[in-house]
Length: 350
Image 1 (cartoon, rainbow, N blue to C red):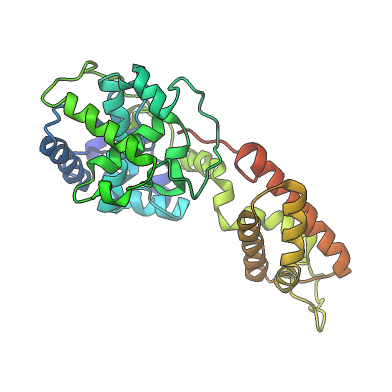
Image 2 (image 1 turned 180 degrees about the vertical axis):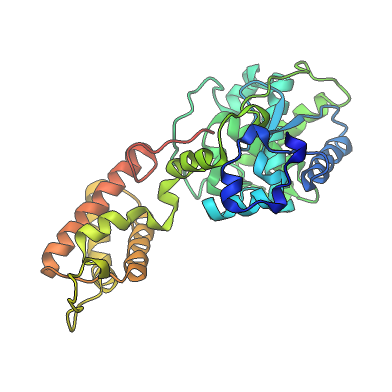
């Protein structure tokens, strides 16, 4: 059945109706194979025998304690990459450079499991307890020099295992002078330890040679439509319309006007009101929540931009609108403080 499906000739609607397990996909024959071979070459140049087995999964991942590496299935075909971009606004790993960065990161996990580095006391002393639970979200310190900076969002600060994977990725990156870049950083000690470990395992086969492949695309009995419905829900706050329903409760939208009703002359744009009181709201919310001002400032900028895009206007006393916006922002920030996201049920799988 898979061989008879030509994804390039299907409409978006037809694609969404297909089950993921039925998609005719493979790493071999796609541009991903070139990236995987480049990764293997980088390991060979470091005299590392280990080659993580790569397979197509539902997302980028290295299953816990399994020396294998999952690559998102949608990267294996141009039509699926196009669909991913439309549904999620971006394609994670969709360029060669980005793909290589993610491959090096996931290989850091896989090599950690393959040689059981995480069991060592020195590893735990340097990176932390591997057994520490993964929280659904994490808070990071942007200016910390204790962690390398490889992937976005300061991902090394998420968990000791992520810290090691990010440090390994930096160490493996060709042409990167990490000694100079991280000179004087505490992260330099981590890089030196990774190099110590890699010198130790040169020409040595892994202790864990085989691994279980979880969330394989070839076994996912879910249509692309259901897949993206679930995925978009998980990442809802990353989409432009995340705040729309609440902003329309505070301000008046064009569709909220009665039939034949005209937009009031001299009506104040909601975006202008948010900008006008930005400093006042920022100061108040920061004082009562303890949140960093740049996070609150970015949130207010997002709200102002969305108000402008929706054409929202003020239809109530300014003082009342100011109070409602302040309460809304405070609620969002408190959710962020406790969950790492702007909604209470924010979740993701690392």
